[in-house]
Length: 379
Image 1 (cartoon, rainbow, N blue to C red):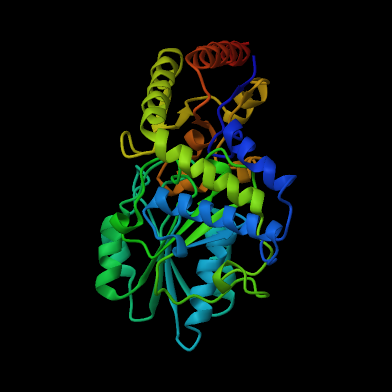
Image 2 (image 1 turned 90 degrees about the horizontal axis):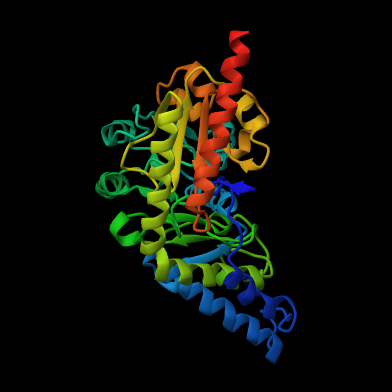
């Protein structure tokens, strides 16, 4: 048996999503900017998808811009806000537990003279809203805080942060790559001005995403060229990918509650069974986290060694973007987790296709490997 438990890295593509794409890969291949019947067919499909994505997050269709994914969306926000306010001395506030798609553009902007303040988190990976408020100065133009952490799944208090930003007249952005399509989101309730979306985190092929830009937000383009995407993002649209994102958004909207009940059940079952066979520590908040995410530190077990022996089980030792580097997760270290426990951390991220049979199989395999590792250490 092969088991995939790395859904926070990427998800399999939903068969209904694949089916929705096919006409726009083959039959309706025209450029959506063309005025003839074949181009119009693609343009119509894009606008249907735009509404589907908007409906999923409570936005207006014209507030949705299609991109290649969350990394592009994040770069567009950070660089675009700076460019649109280039006459000022600027400060951006973010957190130390952001994805590299936020951290690296911030480092780039620092080299350009932008001030960036990195706020810490507590032992549950939650940002203290008072720390955000204290970091704000007269030069602050943007606060960017991820919605949920990709490694431990902790969900951040965005509504409270947004209230602080509104009082100060500061733009508020969230990287929602790990939450859109997984949990209920309404951009108006969250109070965000900008929100990044990654399709491949909720059963869409890689290479398609979106950016929510609240009506009235002043932002410069990241990609310049022709007047695509309402003049905000140049480049001929990936019609098949956009259709896929729209279809997945519709599926998520209709089925999210039922999916989450089962995914949470399986996640908690996995946790309970693992506690019976090994000494484990939960990383992240016990309840305020994604329903699919379980990050555990196995005491006295190196996670790299553990995963290397789990040949047919796809897991992660932290963020999938860092797997080739054997060093403790920066997220866990910033949470105050010891280096030893951080090196023993494994992220289990479930999806809608996982089964109880797979959970039982994984537990038995891990039990056997831990017994082997323990026995070898005794000899």
